Image 1: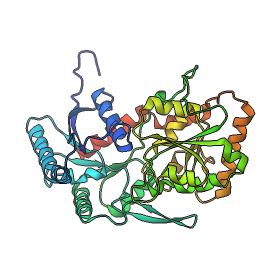
Image 2: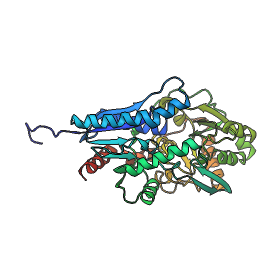
Image 3: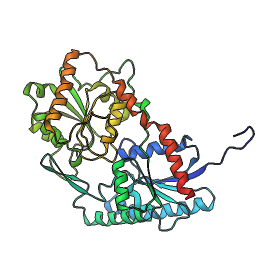
Image 4: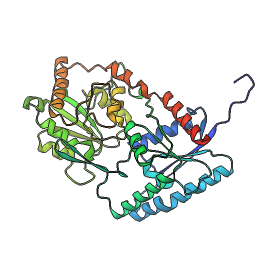
Length: 394
């Protein structure tokens, strides 16, 4: 651009989701980061027209939640699209995730694109791993949820295109919606948020010097395979099992009934502390910096934030070679999902390294920190900007 030339006018985007989510959840974090990117001017050709979401607050009844989700909010979104477009303030609508696909209006004056993170609930699976049936997604949804899923499917069919973030999700998009325009854009990760300082802050009080501490991040949904991990840990040599301590950040209860992870661990003689859920990044970083490795045995992920965040912190990761985190690991560093001996050997090796340090702190691994550079925010912003512009021009 020459001196005196006006800057190209940015196009404007309406960012849409349903109920407000915590920025410390997976989908909530992705939405929050995208919003911040737009508000900070990180997208070269795009700016944020508006955000459309709602906060029910208090303790709404099931009827209130459903009425807001199915009727009130879709009407609000449609009205905002029409109004912003009429005023020349809107060029594209981005629906935050597939669970909000019902918000795609039947008719829109501008393209409406859905950011698809996974299809777990729309196309549920039953996987056979280690002799166990692992449920991925809702196998037996209630009548209301079935109607909700039907609305989501219709919204996906109405959308002008999709953006996804992994090869696994891209494959499903092309299988179920072969004619739908699609971009695959891996998430951006601001690695500077996870780099340990030269002098580490004090570690959480539960991380005693006498034990070798591991971190687990994620819910106790069946696909996360915490029960499998506990079974593996229970088979460690007794001296090792006494020395190993697991710290779990995430939901402890199984969403489809069953024992809590902490209860199952106690029954199997595994030292397991449930730290809690909704933990802020600062606290999470303390656990990443002060524990020996992240254990991530999940059978299926839409993306899998925990492994890349731990790698950005220089923390070793023991993760199963399953979609989609197999795309994110350093080649050769994943563990076969069903090989119990491989998991036992890997955990034992980490314990040996810990014991050899004789109480000295673990040093962050620069190779892991360098590896996540392919998820740079600059690359993400450029790719997303290009995709939005293409949707508008096609």
